[in-house]
Amino acid sequence: MKQQYVYGLAAFFAIVGISIFGYKWQVLGFPVSKDLQTPVWTIESSIGFDSGPGSIKVNLHIPTLTPGFRMLNENSVSRGYGFSLNYGSGGREAQWAIRRADGRQRIYYRISVYEDHKSDQSDTTPPFPPPPAINEPFRTAVEVIVADVKEQSADTASFTAELLRQMNDPSPGPNVELLLSNANTRAELVESITTILASARIPARMIHGFDLQGRSRSAAPITWLEVHDGDRWRYFDPITGEENLPERFLIWWRGNEPLVSVEGGSNVEVGFAVQENHLDAVAIAETQVAQQDAAMIDFSLYSLPIQTQAVYSVLLMIPIGALIMVVLRNMVGIDAFGTFMPVLIALAFRETQLLWGVILFTLLVTLGLSIRFLLERFRLLLVPRLSAVLIIVVILMLIISLVSHRLGMETGLSVALFPMVIIAMTIERMSVVWEERGAVDAMRAGFGSLIVAVTAYVFMGLSWLEHLLFTFPELLLVVLSVVLVLGRYTGYRLLELSRFKALTGS
Image (cartoon, rainbow, N blue to C red; front, side, top):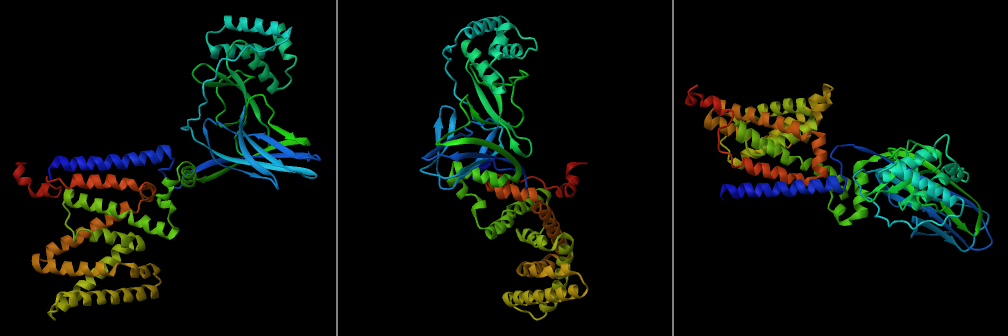
């Protein structure tokens, strides 16, 4: 196959792998860091009321569009009530209904949200509001204020800022003072401001929400001003006039409608509690994907049983060891026994840790190689000879485990987890090379295999890399593309530079 075809195939694999990785990372929210914890806020609304003699219907405004946040889950706790979610003029509403109830009633609504600044939850562009119907003398006061503010502003944002400045002036004019006579609360102030803005044909509305900072047993909704400038909604503090919401402000509902309405009940009380927790980012991503596209989570490794996940977390690191093997052999020029034998040895080091793994491997190979030369005198055939070496390796493992246990070195017990067949094949291969090419080549290949195994062990033991491949297995396509490109390399290896140094003339 021509070289450009190989490079084209490698580029295709890399693009596919990186594209899937980017989609899962940026869109679905899978984390690239291991053990990443995401703060999650749970806001609970408690509605208490006295039931009447007839049927009861409760409506509660709940979050609809929450810029900077995504909903993780929501649920309701109510005994005997029917529950449904509807859309009203102010956004989403939770509705509870029951035919008959006795005594004091308590209904709970709970929602969990987490920060996501990439979420696009922008509202639609509203129409210009109609002129509000205002009675005199308030109508004249509004017209004077609008005319005055227009003279001192240039656009919607500056108009709003100037209006808020005048409405909060310590020494307000008579027109402002007249309008503020009915504004005793923050919400009433914002309602008066939206009326003035509507008279100026500027879309504006009240928003109510919570500043999510830690935990709070008794949280009260805070009212802000939301103004549309023709392109987007802008937020203003009605008291200070500052633009932009606090860092973690969750909008609960919009408009001047009451938060809750109860038909068939009296003495209504509403309370809010906020609690902050930290959840694993992978679990949040799984929940979000399950809500958006159930088919995607079905093909995630996290959907497998726990035991199977543990197996694949190890198997997915083998391609990394193979890549290390390709680099060290084709680029550096390190000689080793076999193609994947050093990678399998590196897997064995994961059980014994590196230092003990090198010591035990060297000891087993040395002892096994000595006994292999003794068996050479018997002139056995290949299969019986390998079987004899395998049996001897098992006996050596048993002896080392017993001796290490008697000496109090429990690490030696893990030698039983070594791949016995790999060690037996290493001993056999090393003895053949010893006979065919001499002791120097055999020792060089054995030492090279150990170097490759140690290097592969270091990279295969990186926890962040293991998490990355397990969460984004499509990155194996990128590894495959790198191997394909390296497979076309025919230049000098690093260790050959000293060998051919005389040809360079230096």
